[in-house]
Length: 354
Image 1: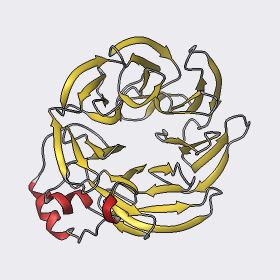
Image 2: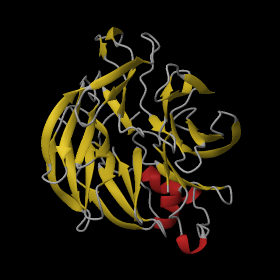
Image 3: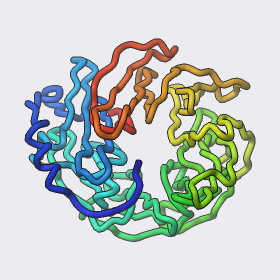
Image 4: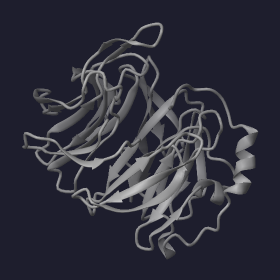
């Protein structure tokens, strides 16, 4: 999904709101919603019915349409991501061209940063400053003032910037190519907010994790060039690329996908010991030891997203049957044995843990 960046909420969102109203429990007593699992549901493109689901693992209860129920209005069109930082949640809604900031105790909206073009993912540096990627052809990273809740500056980067990660005092940005192709990481100095360097990594990097040996694992979805009739003119395999973030040296490239499978991976994760990486490919969720030579298929299922609980290593897998009906969250033990399943919103794509 995430096809373009058109306008505002539609009236249908208000109609749907009345049908999805739920009673909100205390969310864990004095902690409110500060501890739990959050699922972003994209919704149907153009329909302003994206949502947030909240799962309380202690009570095994799922609350769908949390934002709407608390705030009395739709969240927006294509809910791309949520980032949890301190006592706040930052919800990026890319087709509504905004980022909602909520108080995690009550989940009430405390501010909106709008006027964005194609926002994708947010990363908080501290309680005063954060970074938000804008996934256009001419990519940029917005510098967000978290005190005044406004855009402070913009930093140029590669095409289609997506996920980011901090290493020492540098911000590494994956340039996914957007609707085209790119093969770089942009490295930004977080003290000056200037680009330090651009590093070549692999075709269309989209996600990244840092392992226990301080090596950067980057998921590259591969290059795709389309003909006018939407057939594929050129394609390369998806891969995991391992880089030393201090020196920039690439130490390993691992092919993980197959040309012609019509699947371009978007998600990866890491376990709590940071010695096992996970990635989503056409067949399902794979794991690979950082010093191993083989990937293992843990969850054999067609999925749209997943997350790994940093406390328990439990795997939360997301399935979207369509973008008109509710999706599902499947929970798995670290060995890939399924625990249960719960209904979530339309088009579930990301899991965040707090």
